Length: 287
Image (cartoon, rainbow, N blue to C red; front, side, top):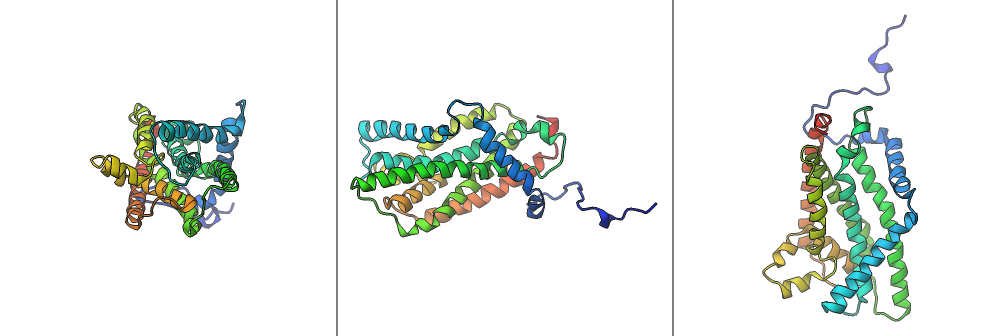
Protein backbone atom coordinates (compact mmCIF):
# COMPACT_ATOMS: atom_id res chain seq x y z
CA UNK A 1 0.00 0.00 0.00
CA UNK A 2 1.47 3.33 -1.06
CA UNK A 3 2.00 6.01 1.54
CA UNK A 4 0.26 9.32 0.88
CA UNK A 5 2.63 12.25 0.74
CA UNK A 6 1.73 15.80 1.59
CA UNK A 7 2.22 16.70 -2.05
CA UNK A 8 -0.73 14.49 -3.01
CA UNK A 9 -3.21 16.84 -1.31
CA UNK A 10 -4.74 19.63 -3.32
CA UNK A 11 -5.60 21.76 -0.28
CA UNK A 12 -4.47 21.76 3.31
CA UNK A 13 -6.61 23.28 6.04
CA UNK A 14 -4.59 24.35 9.07
CA UNK A 15 -5.37 26.41 12.18
CA UNK A 16 -5.35 30.14 11.49
CA UNK A 17 -2.88 31.55 13.98
CA UNK A 18 -2.01 34.83 12.28
CA UNK A 19 -3.58 37.87 13.90
CA UNK A 20 -4.12 39.48 10.52
CA UNK A 21 -4.70 37.71 7.25
CA UNK A 22 -6.39 38.36 3.94
CA UNK A 23 -5.68 35.20 1.99
CA UNK A 24 -6.68 36.27 -1.52
CA UNK A 25 -5.38 32.99 -2.94
CA UNK A 26 -7.75 31.01 -0.74
CA UNK A 27 -10.66 33.28 -1.67
CA UNK A 28 -9.89 32.66 -5.33
CA UNK A 29 -9.89 28.91 -4.71
CA UNK A 30 -13.42 29.22 -3.29
CA UNK A 31 -14.63 31.59 -6.03
CA UNK A 32 -17.36 29.14 -7.08
CA UNK A 33 -18.81 29.31 -3.59
CA UNK A 34 -18.55 33.09 -3.67
CA UNK A 35 -20.56 33.24 -6.90
CA UNK A 36 -23.09 30.80 -5.42
CA UNK A 37 -23.62 33.09 -2.41
CA UNK A 38 -23.98 36.08 -4.74
CA UNK A 39 -26.64 34.22 -6.73
CA UNK A 40 -28.42 33.29 -3.51
CA UNK A 41 -28.46 36.88 -2.30
CA UNK A 42 -29.81 38.23 -5.57
CA UNK A 43 -32.44 35.60 -6.38
CA UNK A 44 -33.75 34.07 -3.17
CA UNK A 45 -34.27 37.30 -1.21
CA UNK A 46 -37.25 38.30 -3.35
CA UNK A 47 -38.21 34.87 -4.67
CA UNK A 48 -41.42 34.63 -2.61
CA UNK A 49 -42.44 38.29 -2.83
CA UNK A 50 -45.28 39.70 -4.92
CA UNK A 51 -43.26 42.40 -6.70
CA UNK A 52 -39.90 40.61 -6.68
CA UNK A 53 -36.97 42.66 -8.04
CA UNK A 54 -39.31 45.65 -8.52
CA UNK A 55 -38.59 46.45 -4.88
CA UNK A 56 -35.14 47.53 -6.07
CA UNK A 57 -36.87 50.26 -8.08
CA UNK A 58 -39.78 51.19 -5.84
CA UNK A 59 -37.73 51.99 -2.73
CA UNK A 60 -35.45 54.71 -4.18
CA UNK A 61 -38.29 56.25 -6.21
CA UNK A 62 -40.65 56.56 -3.25
CA UNK A 63 -37.85 57.82 -1.00
CA UNK A 64 -36.85 60.44 -3.58
CA UNK A 65 -40.45 61.63 -3.92
CA UNK A 66 -40.79 61.85 -0.13
CA UNK A 67 -37.54 63.80 0.25
CA UNK A 68 -38.53 66.14 -2.58
CA UNK A 69 -41.85 66.95 -0.91
CA UNK A 70 -40.48 67.35 2.62
CA UNK A 71 -37.04 68.87 2.15
CA UNK A 72 -37.43 70.81 -1.08
CA UNK A 73 -41.09 71.82 -1.21
CA UNK A 74 -41.78 72.20 2.53
CA UNK A 75 -38.34 73.01 4.00
CA UNK A 76 -37.32 74.99 0.92
CA UNK A 77 -33.89 73.45 0.31
CA UNK A 78 -32.61 74.87 -2.97
CA UNK A 79 -30.85 72.55 -5.44
CA UNK A 80 -30.07 75.26 -7.99
CA UNK A 81 -30.57 74.34 -11.63
CA UNK A 82 -30.80 70.63 -10.77
CA UNK A 83 -34.35 69.24 -10.47
CA UNK A 84 -34.89 68.40 -6.78
CA UNK A 85 -36.13 64.89 -7.54
CA UNK A 86 -33.02 64.07 -9.58
CA UNK A 87 -30.80 65.64 -6.91
CA UNK A 88 -32.33 63.41 -4.23
CA UNK A 89 -32.34 60.31 -6.45
CA UNK A 90 -28.58 60.65 -7.06
CA UNK A 91 -27.82 60.78 -3.33
CA UNK A 92 -30.27 58.02 -2.40
CA UNK A 93 -29.00 55.64 -5.09
CA UNK A 94 -25.44 55.87 -3.78
CA UNK A 95 -26.55 55.82 -0.15
CA UNK A 96 -28.67 52.69 -0.67
CA UNK A 97 -25.59 50.76 -1.77
CA UNK A 98 -23.81 51.57 1.48
CA UNK A 99 -26.77 50.70 3.69
CA UNK A 100 -27.38 47.44 1.82
CA UNK A 101 -23.73 46.44 2.31
CA UNK A 102 -23.73 47.42 5.97
CA UNK A 103 -27.04 45.74 6.82
CA UNK A 104 -26.13 42.59 4.91
CA UNK A 105 -22.67 42.15 6.43
CA UNK A 106 -23.46 43.23 10.00
CA UNK A 107 -25.40 40.00 10.62
CA UNK A 108 -22.85 37.62 9.11
CA UNK A 109 -22.13 35.33 12.05
CA UNK A 110 -25.65 35.11 13.42
CA UNK A 111 -27.29 34.56 10.03
CA UNK A 112 -24.78 31.92 8.88
CA UNK A 113 -24.09 30.11 12.16
CA UNK A 114 -25.61 26.86 10.89
CA UNK A 115 -23.31 26.86 7.85
CA UNK A 116 -20.18 27.97 9.69
CA UNK A 117 -20.60 25.17 12.23
CA UNK A 118 -20.71 22.39 9.62
CA UNK A 119 -18.24 23.08 6.84
CA UNK A 120 -15.03 25.00 6.33
CA UNK A 121 -14.58 27.82 3.86
CA UNK A 122 -13.03 31.29 4.21
CA UNK A 123 -15.57 33.11 6.36
CA UNK A 124 -14.89 36.45 4.69
CA UNK A 125 -16.53 35.07 1.55
CA UNK A 126 -19.95 35.55 3.16
CA UNK A 127 -19.75 39.34 3.75
CA UNK A 128 -17.82 39.73 0.50
CA UNK A 129 -20.66 38.10 -1.41
CA UNK A 130 -23.08 40.62 0.09
CA UNK A 131 -21.00 43.53 -1.18
CA UNK A 132 -20.79 42.02 -4.68
CA UNK A 133 -24.47 41.08 -4.89
CA UNK A 134 -25.46 44.58 -3.82
CA UNK A 135 -23.44 45.92 -6.74
CA UNK A 136 -25.98 44.24 -8.99
CA UNK A 137 -28.83 45.87 -7.10
CA UNK A 138 -27.01 49.19 -7.29
CA UNK A 139 -26.65 48.74 -11.04
CA UNK A 140 -30.42 48.29 -11.41
CA UNK A 141 -31.13 51.42 -9.37
CA UNK A 142 -28.47 53.37 -11.26
CA UNK A 143 -30.19 52.53 -14.55
CA UNK A 144 -33.33 54.15 -13.15
CA UNK A 145 -31.29 57.25 -12.28
CA UNK A 146 -29.96 57.38 -15.85
CA UNK A 147 -33.51 57.08 -17.21
CA UNK A 148 -34.70 60.07 -15.16
CA UNK A 149 -31.51 61.96 -16.02
CA UNK A 150 -32.31 61.58 -19.73
CA UNK A 151 -35.96 62.48 -19.09
CA UNK A 152 -35.06 65.79 -17.44
CA UNK A 153 -32.37 66.47 -20.03
CA UNK A 154 -34.85 66.05 -22.88
CA UNK A 155 -37.26 68.37 -21.07
CA UNK A 156 -34.57 71.06 -21.12
CA UNK A 157 -33.03 70.89 -17.65
CA UNK A 158 -29.51 72.30 -17.36
CA UNK A 159 -27.72 68.99 -16.80
CA UNK A 160 -24.07 68.22 -17.57
CA UNK A 161 -21.79 65.40 -16.56
CA UNK A 162 -18.50 66.33 -14.96
CA UNK A 163 -15.36 64.94 -16.62
CA UNK A 164 -14.45 63.24 -13.34
CA UNK A 165 -17.41 60.88 -13.76
CA UNK A 166 -14.95 58.29 -15.12
CA UNK A 167 -13.79 57.84 -11.51
CA UNK A 168 -17.31 57.14 -10.28
CA UNK A 169 -16.76 53.34 -10.12
CA UNK A 170 -13.77 53.95 -7.82
CA UNK A 171 -15.99 56.04 -5.55
CA UNK A 172 -18.56 53.24 -5.33
CA UNK A 173 -15.79 50.72 -4.62
CA UNK A 174 -14.58 52.85 -1.70
CA UNK A 175 -18.12 52.99 -0.33
CA UNK A 176 -18.44 49.20 -0.65
CA UNK A 177 -15.15 48.64 1.20
CA UNK A 178 -16.26 51.04 3.94
CA UNK A 179 -19.56 49.17 4.30
CA UNK A 180 -17.70 45.85 4.36
CA UNK A 181 -15.29 47.01 7.06
CA UNK A 182 -18.04 48.40 9.29
CA UNK A 183 -20.17 45.33 8.67
CA UNK A 184 -17.40 42.93 9.73
CA UNK A 185 -16.80 45.03 12.83
CA UNK A 186 -20.47 45.09 13.80
CA UNK A 187 -21.05 41.40 13.02
CA UNK A 188 -18.29 40.52 15.47
CA UNK A 189 -20.00 42.56 18.19
CA UNK A 190 -23.44 41.10 17.47
CA UNK A 191 -22.18 37.62 18.41
CA UNK A 192 -21.92 38.77 22.04
CA UNK A 193 -24.40 41.64 22.18
CA UNK A 194 -27.57 40.71 20.29
CA UNK A 195 -29.30 44.05 20.91
CA UNK A 196 -26.48 45.80 19.08
CA UNK A 197 -28.21 44.95 15.78
CA UNK A 198 -31.21 47.10 16.83
CA UNK A 199 -28.85 49.97 17.54
CA UNK A 200 -27.38 49.60 14.05
CA UNK A 201 -30.82 49.98 12.45
CA UNK A 202 -31.43 53.19 14.35
CA UNK A 203 -27.88 54.41 13.75
CA UNK A 204 -28.16 54.02 9.97
CA UNK A 205 -31.30 56.14 9.90
CA UNK A 206 -29.58 58.84 11.92
CA UNK A 207 -26.41 58.60 9.86
CA UNK A 208 -28.34 59.31 6.67
CA UNK A 209 -29.16 62.81 7.91
CA UNK A 210 -25.49 63.42 8.67
CA UNK A 211 -24.31 62.21 5.26
CA UNK A 212 -25.66 65.04 3.06
CA UNK A 213 -28.01 62.66 1.24
CA UNK A 214 -30.83 65.18 0.81
CA UNK A 215 -28.95 68.49 1.01
CA UNK A 216 -25.65 70.02 -0.21
CA UNK A 217 -22.81 69.99 2.30
CA UNK A 218 -22.42 73.75 1.92
CA UNK A 219 -25.97 74.25 3.18
CA UNK A 220 -25.36 72.68 6.58
CA UNK A 221 -22.23 74.78 7.02
CA UNK A 222 -24.18 77.98 6.36
CA UNK A 223 -27.42 77.16 8.19
CA UNK A 224 -26.04 75.23 11.19
CA UNK A 225 -22.37 76.13 11.61
CA UNK A 226 -22.30 74.72 15.15
CA UNK A 227 -23.24 71.26 13.89
CA UNK A 228 -21.45 71.43 10.56
CA UNK A 229 -18.46 69.57 11.97
CA UNK A 230 -20.61 66.45 12.34
CA UNK A 231 -21.04 66.36 8.57
CA UNK A 232 -17.47 67.43 7.79
CA UNK A 233 -16.03 64.53 9.82
CA UNK A 234 -18.39 62.03 8.19
CA UNK A 235 -16.56 60.28 5.31
CA UNK A 236 -19.87 59.22 3.77
CA UNK A 237 -20.83 62.86 3.24
CA UNK A 238 -17.81 63.39 0.98
CA UNK A 239 -18.71 60.30 -1.07
CA UNK A 240 -22.32 61.47 -1.53
CA UNK A 241 -21.26 65.05 -2.35
CA UNK A 242 -18.57 63.89 -4.78
CA UNK A 243 -20.96 61.50 -6.53
CA UNK A 244 -23.42 64.34 -7.16
CA UNK A 245 -20.54 66.51 -8.38
CA UNK A 246 -19.58 63.81 -10.89
CA UNK A 247 -23.10 62.91 -12.02
CA UNK A 248 -24.84 66.30 -11.91
CA UNK A 249 -21.92 68.74 -11.95
CA UNK A 250 -23.27 70.45 -8.85
CA UNK A 251 -21.76 71.16 -5.45
CA UNK A 252 -18.04 70.93 -4.89
CA UNK A 253 -15.31 68.37 -4.61
CA UNK A 254 -12.89 68.37 -1.68
CA UNK A 255 -9.57 66.69 -2.37
CA UNK A 256 -8.69 66.88 1.31
CA UNK A 257 -12.07 65.39 2.23
CA UNK A 258 -11.62 62.53 -0.22
CA UNK A 259 -8.14 61.78 1.15
CA UNK A 260 -9.63 61.75 4.65
CA UNK A 261 -12.38 59.40 3.43
CA UNK A 262 -9.85 57.04 1.86
CA UNK A 263 -7.76 56.89 5.05
CA UNK A 264 -10.82 56.24 7.21
CA UNK A 265 -12.00 53.52 4.80
CA UNK A 266 -8.65 51.72 4.88
CA UNK A 267 -8.44 51.98 8.67
CA UNK A 268 -12.01 50.73 9.19
CA UNK A 269 -11.50 47.84 6.77
CA UNK A 270 -8.31 46.60 8.43
CA UNK A 271 -9.69 46.98 11.97
CA UNK A 272 -12.88 45.20 10.91
CA UNK A 273 -10.88 42.40 9.30
CA UNK A 274 -8.69 41.97 12.39
CA UNK A 275 -11.68 41.65 14.72
CA UNK A 276 -13.55 39.48 12.20
CA UNK A 277 -10.62 37.04 12.02
CA UNK A 278 -10.40 36.91 15.80
CA UNK A 279 -14.14 36.37 16.27
CA UNK A 280 -14.50 33.56 13.73
CA UNK A 281 -12.30 31.30 15.89
CA UNK A 282 -14.72 31.25 18.83
CA UNK A 283 -18.02 32.78 17.72
CA UNK A 284 -19.76 29.39 17.55
CA UNK A 285 -19.64 29.23 21.38
CA UNK A 286 -21.50 32.53 21.78
CA UNK A 287 -23.99 32.62 18.87
